[in-house]
Image 1 (cartoon, rainbow, N blue to C red):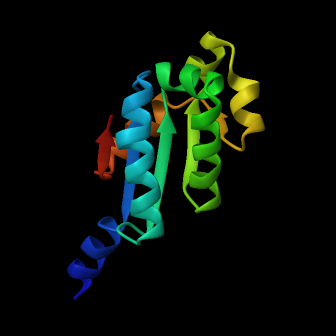
Image 2: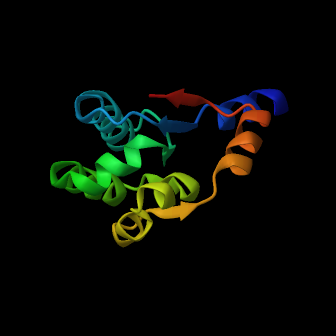
Length: 121
């Protein structure tokens, strides 16, 4: 069925919006779920967006940076909001980690309009 195929594709992709500057939230929820969901095949495609204070803590915390390296190596697409990272002065640091830093307001709005699955933490 054509309709079923469309729904199947929609249910393969997840966008995780990480906004918290809390280290424990990053380690105990965001990173743990992202890595397990990708490596165990719970979602075929996972996109992690670093937005707001999460960019600052990621740039400052070496343990989070090591964990993020594993997430990227697992095949998770990681992006960061340039407006946020520029305001914290960490854009270059995140780009050096292999994170795509770009303005996210419009792309995020389009994702929502398309009805993408979004988990915000």
